[in-house]
Image (cartoon, rainbow, N blue to C red; front, side, top):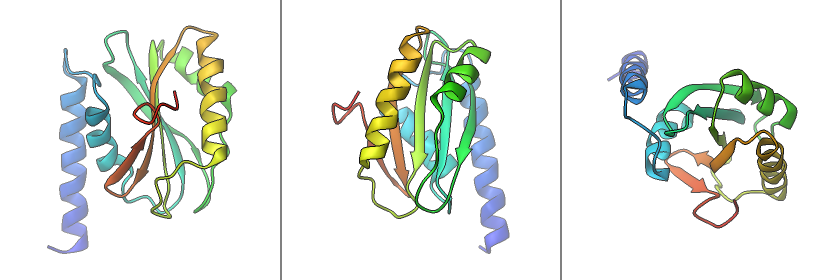
Length: 149
């Protein structure tokens, strides 16, 4: 299978998964569900990107978007923009995600700091943050599973 054919297959898989997650009753009720979705969306990215998944009260995906993109080693994240977009989508919760193209899932001190700032900012407008995930290829680090949320 050549590269173009592989890309088409991946794109079809993402489309099907996206449709499936938007069906009534399908929700990000576990870290594993978010992991599976994010592996497809972010695993091959060459630059660091910060994505937000906007969820309704039942943790169903309303929308997702890459809010910030950066270099191969960092991305600047602005809490004000995350809050603004979460309110725009009328989200009850958000899952935060970014990738580490370096391949090391270990969160940096900057990752921990921005996560706490985002949680605090979103709490002010009653928006939950069930998890922040760091994607490194097939490996994904969960802040929630490591007690960092």
